[in-house]
Amino acid sequence: MPAISFQSVSKTFPAARGGSGQPLKALDNVSFDIEEGEFFGLLGPNGAGKTTLISILAGLARATSGRVLVQGHDVQTDYAQSRRRLGVVPQELVFDPFFNVREALRFQSGYFGVKHNDAWIDELLDSLGLADKANANMRQLSGGMKRRVLVAQALVHKPPVIVLDEPTAGVDVELRQTLWQFIAKLNKQGHTVLLTTHYLEEAEALCGRIAMLKQGRVVALATMADLLKSASSNVLRFKIDSELPPFLAGKARITGRIVQLPAHNAHEVEQYLAAIREAGLHAEDIEVRKADLEDVFLDVMGANA
Amino acid sequence: MTGWQTLFYKEILRFWKVSFQTVAAPVLTAVLYMMIFGHVLEDHVKVYGTVSYTAFLVPGLVMMSVLQNAFANSSSSLVQSKIMGNVVFLLLTPLSHWSWFFAYVGSSVARGLLVGAGVFIATAFFATPSFVAPWWILVFAVLGAAMLGALGLIAGLWAEKFDQMAAFQNFIIMPMTFLSGVFYSIHSLPPFWQSVSHLNPFFYMIDGFRHGFFGVSDVSPWLSLGIVGAALLFVSAIAVHLLRIGYKIRG
Image (cartoon, rainbow over all chains, first blue to last red; front, side, top):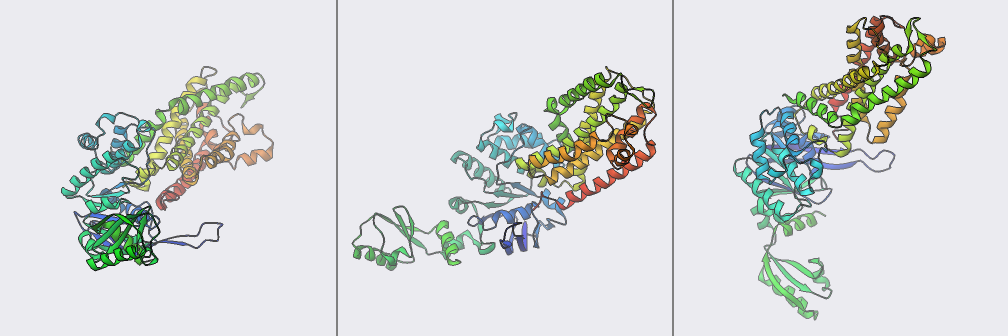
């Protein structure tokens, strides 16, 4: 039985009241399964429907059609069972200003009917570097610390399936490492992890399998290894001060002075370099590297334009 | 503790942590009403022929405080957690709509009764009313607080900003409590306004509650019980339905 099963999930938001806008189709017939123990990445540009899909999974929103199962339990008709199995770290940095960290975690345990949970709460606080903040009011915590509490709150009932919606947005390097070590440890212990992130290098390092969403549709679904193989295998990267010839500009990804061109073989690399020479341009810091997830991502998103 | 008990306890702790605002302030307000209206009207008004105005005023002020604070508790808690976004912590849990209902309404009843007890103790220094039928006092206090707690739940779900919440409180709850006979017996009103008062369910809460103290009231406490009970069921049914469909909290 899959840990999470999305079955023909569609979601349409009605047109804004008073406006003449069209209804917005945020998700269009999304279907895929995530198996037990997977570390799964859900990627896509802003507005692709990632958060909507996770909201439906978590019961924060309802699908217009289709259904979602968590370890076989329907998130609508059997919500108590499905929510017990899910630990969700929301994207927004929210907190309850009335309480301190330990109180917040005790309440969250209680809502799930978990009693005498202090041993696990202490372990969570330790693992997330929050031990000395247990009695601090939520208002006094920095953004990074609040983010850690959100993670602890999601895990307080020991859910087998963990969902992280952009958990490292605006988070410093140290916390990102602490967080990923901890999540990777949980994944090794058998927890299923579903992650959405904009940091593609994080997804590449962590996820075994990836789904890419674009305008509410799944446009890629494969293991990380297959995705990387599917892309042009290499990238020619160099710096240049002048404008590229049109032949290259059409294919290149340009970030400031840095130009990156997909290259499938040595012949293509030679062609590119020849084009630069013929245009009388001067390229610096030339290197050929292996394609990464970001290249694949841009390929996939571009191909479906 | 089970899920709903945890939420109930959290809601109690929430208002208790700011008890100056949620308990002490409404008690002080009621004492000020007592001092001013009691001072102005004590020598001029006798109610039911025998009851001094100050003594008459005590149960009215107590019940008004019970109702207003029960409403304020569930409504402000919900609207705050919606605006702060922390309502998501509840939405992610397996808590059923019944759990939400009993926790929010239960904590509203607790705050209403606590403030009511505070107002009673403070105003009893001015005039101690009798306790002719204490069961009526308790029954109407609990039912009234529960109805306003449920109404607060509806308002809290409906309101998207504090301004809408304030509108609900100031344009519906306040007039209905003030015009329900807190400060007067409706027998002192012209016949037309007496009939209008009979359409206000808050009137029956206060009238029944006051019957518990004096053994006299504008209408029979059994009639009041029936109307208050029916109003409570009606409002609760709406509140539970809105929670079940996730009105304005689940997309």
